[in-house]
Structures are given as C-alpha cells and as structure tokens.
Image (cartoon, rainbow, N blue to C red; front, side):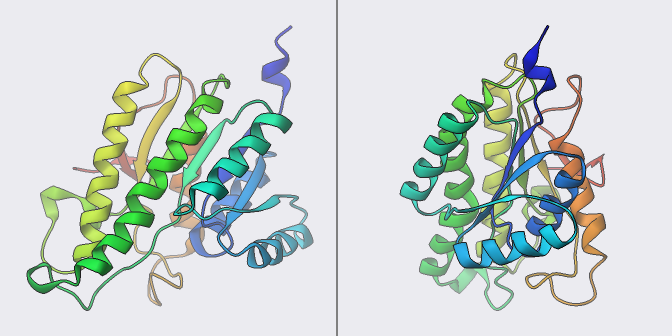
Amino acid sequence: MNLEKQLPSLAIVTGANRGIGLEVTRQLAHQNITVILGARDLEKGKAAAETLATEGFEVLPRWLDVTNQQSIDRLATEVKQKFGRLDILVNNAGILYDTWQQAIDANLDTVRTALETNVFGPWRMCQAFIPLLRQSQRGRIVNVSSGAGALTSMSGGIPAYGVSKAALNALTRKLADELKGTGILVNAVCPGWVATEMGGAGGRPIEQGAAGIVWAATLPENGPTGGFFRDQKPLAW
C-alpha cells in the first residue's frame, strides 16, 4: 500500500494574504489541499486565514517574505520537520507594475527592487523547496507571470515589471529542463488582467485568473512542463 498517495497534498502560496494569491489559496483548499498561506505581514496573513475559516477552509498562515532568506529557510525547516515533503509551490508574490516608467530613463533602484521580489524571490523559494518537492510523487511549481513578460509581444513601458516577468519566464524554462525526469512539473501562468489591488478596476473576475494557476498546480502526471499558459492555453514566450 502506498501511503504517500493517501496523504492530502501540501501547497505553499506566496503573497497569499490578498488578491490572486488569496483566491488561489481558497481554490486549492476547496480541493482538500492543505495550504500554507505565505504572507510578508503575518498579521495580515492570519486575518486572511480567518476569513477563509469562516468559509469552511482551514489554512496555515505563515510569515514568508520572499526577499528574506531567513523567513524562507525557517519555513522550509518547519515543512521538512512536520510534513517531510511539499507537493505544490505557487510563486505568486509580485510587485511594481511601474506604469510611470520607461526603460530609457527608468530608476534602476526601482527595477532592482522588482527583480528582488519577482525573480530572485521565486528563485530562492525553488532552491529552498525543490529538495522537499523531490519527496513528493506529484511535485508542481507554478510561477505566476504575465503577458507583460512575453518577448514576442513586448513593447515599451512598465520596464521593471516587464523585464522581471521575462526573467521569471526564463527561470521557468531553466528549472523545467533541469527537473525533467523527477516528476516535478514547472510552468509559468499569466492570470490575465484581473481586478485586484495591483491590477486595478476593470479586470476580469479574480476567480477566473486564479483558476489557471490552480490548474497548473494540480496537473496530472502527464501534464506539460516548461510551458507558459493563460486559461490552460499556451502563450507565446
């Protein structure tokens, strides 16, 4: 008897106390997946978890700042000790939709800040948790990206955000290739323009944007890896 298959899946979602991250957490919990709700501000994470609890979903709020290696290592140690594995990593935390900038005169400190969260954050998370994902029979990594990072359609403006998401897409390809044969599937997902605090009013319902991320997080064994998707459909890089 394979006890591994009988255990509920375990997921980590970064930047999960609001917006798309919170909705992804909700949808994963709805599938009876144990979700660690990562939040840079633990009090906000606890408040988000309490909101989900009123809906009947029990999640585990944890301090997780993807720019802080100590917080990542601390969580990795806890997950290793309590669960011994990780099944799903959703790198959702992202910042700086810098509509006020152009590449020709962008503030490079601002760009560096975006890269720290949007690229190095997921990279740190992957390095810390891939050893635990290797202990799963269904390891999945989802990097929440954006069409703004697609080279084929890239235009001027939002340099910090666009360049950081293009780099995240490149990281997705690198990791997917290096993890071939391990059972770990790695994909980038664009949720589309969603009505969130970052996306602003006018976007589509947050449930729709989150659904594509949840799809990639729960792919079957023969699912794709190294892809870029929106609404389960491939996007051009």
